[in-house]
Image 1 (cartoon, one colour):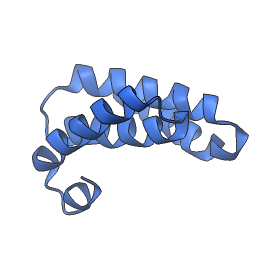
Image 2 (spheres, rainbow, N blue to C red):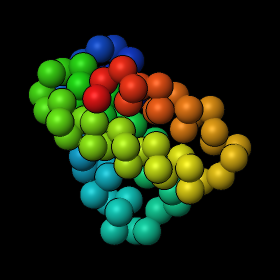
Image 3 (cartoon, rainbow, N blue to C red):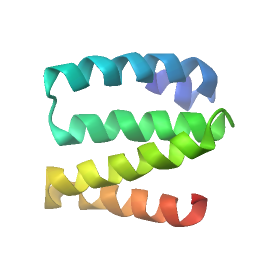
Image 4 (cartoon, rainbow, N blue to C red):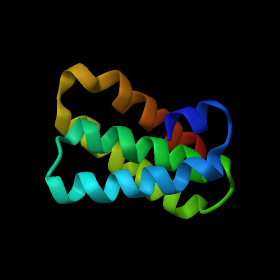
Length: 88
C-alpha cells in the first residue's frame, strides 16, 4: 500500500490499507501499527478525493493511537495534529 501511495496511486492503495486494518484490528495490534495504517489510509482517501470525511475520521484515530503509543511517537502525533488543522 505504501508503494502505491508513494507512486501517487492512491486509489490502488486504499483496498490494501483497508484489508491490513481489518486484519490488524482482529489481532489486537499495537497502537503504533494501527496509527500507521490509519494514517496511510487517511492520506490515500484524501488525496484520491474518495471519501474526505472518512479521511479526517481516520486521521483523528491515527493521531490518538500515536498518542497512546507513547512520547517516542510524538513527531507523528504532531504531524497528524497539523494535518487535521489544515484538513478539517
